[in-house]
Length: 223
Image (tube, rainbow, N blue to C red):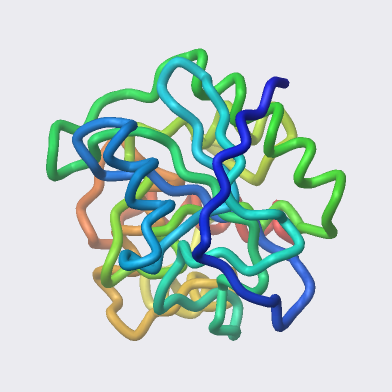
């Protein structure tokens, strides 16, 4: 895996051990703009890695340092996700500029990189998340076109079976989301984020039988 060093000045010391991997899309019109922003001291944003659509991989911030990618975020009872995580940005224009599927070359490099990160850090599968998972009221990325199921098949993260006998009552849905890790302060945003990740074919922001079933099976997978 060839890595191009493109250091960003936007980082600081970690305040906690790494136990998360957070995936993003850049949400900008092109790779050059995204790379420039992630290296702009005035922008005060960064990530550890950036992967272009052709699979080119850029290293921006050393993994031992705290990159500034998650912003105001929360997962499994803890804030300061930046201190706990490795952040990977994927070049994609996002929902604002023409959201599109992630190319094969990009995903193949992501899987190789993510596996290497998981070897280096004690990251449980349930802590492989998207930006929307840790900031559901603010973010949509990497969105419903991201191939989470494929990553899980490759050993990166979790993804529930599409069908099964496990189910939850609707009244138990928010409690199950919170137990898995989501901030449910805004219930519709939390359900939307869950659906973008785990039931992407229909993102409604409301519980239904399929969403509740997948949530039940995901909770069982997480243990």
